Structures are given as C-alpha cells and as structure tokens.
Image 1: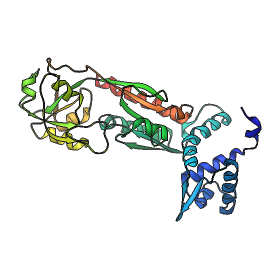
Image 2: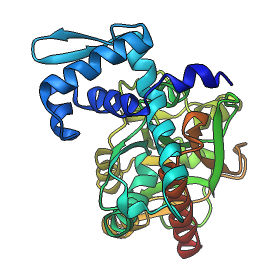
Image 3: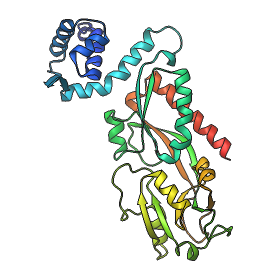
Image 4: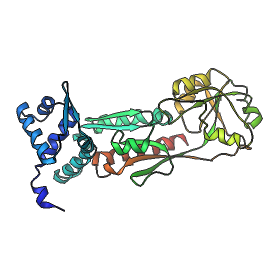
Length: 317
C-alpha cells in the first residue's frame, strides 16, 4: 500500500466529491456540506489537482461528470460507508443512514415484497429511499455500473463479480379465471390447453416485448411439435391479470405468485399437463455486485429482503 501517496490525500475531499456527484451543482453541494460556494469551488480545484482530471464540465447550471468522475461515483459510496463503519462506535445503525438504494424486482415478487419492505424501512431506516423498477435489460451491466444496487432474478450463470443469494423456489403452473371451462378439471391435458389462447406475461423484461420471444413453456411445447396461440404479450402485470380474469385466456405463472391477486381477481391455478416436459422449479436469487459487498447498509437491506421473502414463503406453503 502506498501510504506516502495516501498521506497527501485529504479524505474530506472525497466527501466533497460525493456531494458534487450527487448534487451536480457547486452551490447545492456547498449548501449540503454547510460551506460557502467559493469554498466549494476551491475544493473542486483541489480535487482536480489531486486526481489529475477535470472531473466535471458545465452545461447550463448542471455539472456533467467526466468518465473518471462517473467511475468514482460507482466506487465512492461503498468506500465512504466503510470509512464510517471504522470510525462509528458500536454496531451499524440503519436509523442514521441517509441515501438511496436502487432495486429491480419483477412484479410477481414486488406485489408481496415491496409493501412489507417499505413498512420495515420507514420504521428502522427512515432516511433510506428505495427506488424500485420492474426489471433490467442488462442485469450484470446495471449492477456493475451502479445503475442498480440489487436485483431479484431467476438463477443462472453469472459473472464472478456478482454475489447470488438464494431467495425462493417456485413451481410453474397454468392460471385461469375461476369461470374458465377448464377450471372444473383437476388435471389438464396438452390437447385441452392448446385449444385456448394465452397471455404471455414477461416477468423480467422491462422495455419492449415481442410475440416472437419464446419462453421456456414455448420451447417445451415445440419439443413435442406443438405451439400455443398467443392473444396478448405484455410486461404489464395488471393488464395481464385483468385479461386472464375476464376472458378464456390462460397464463403460465408460478404456484406461489400473486396470492392477493388470486383472491381479488378470482383466479385458479392448475398443474402443468403430465405429458409436458418442463423444469420442475424456478429458483429466484437476490443479486448484488461485489462493489457494495462491504457496505453496511447494503448488507442490512439484503438481510431484510431475504427475511421478508422467507416469511412470505412460509405463509404461502
């Protein structure tokens, strides 16, 4: 470790840099740190000298970070949190944390998870703001670049930079309205289900969807020389669930999903036909990038998410 070089760096400059990155304004950053605007301007000049980079350019009233500043923006929060852990006495106190954490959660999990998580967060960490989106087009990139802090996804091969924590195991099944002609059958056949149109609900795609995208269900049918008829393809949960409950459309979901929605919309579930080969389970995981592995607030929130999901699983058994 180059202690001589570190000794020349004022750690207060990193705090100021974090404020500048968050506020994108010298004036607002100065107000945040309770110093004058000229003093903050001098701090910015010192930062540019210490880091040998312009760090920001101005467009109108907004500071635009340089590539190096954007890189630091991804690394600084965890670094500063670690420093706080070193100097704070005793155990980490989530009640003192102020900041934002960004999570991507598919709606079939969010409907039961987020309200419980927010209830807990507002009591135990009132300064924490959760920004929740429905999905990500590139999970690994968004986690690595700091666009996301966590995401809930289907388990799969991920890079070594991501930490994967098991959450739940779901079983796929067929959803339909309680008034559907097939609802009276305990077991369904392949011949029965392909007679009806399907709603294809994209669980983990947040932007453009297409009928040409085949799910695992489509691939299982194709292996038998069969194909389903799609009436609606959507990533909008309420649209999908309303359509299923008010039509003869079927939908592939999982056995434990949407407990409240099944009661509200009067939806019933049926097992996959026995002749249809399919994966017997869907493993959900909580993903986090290693850049936040040392952050106390990220560790605290991950533990809360896992606890809540496990409690939901116990209730739904």
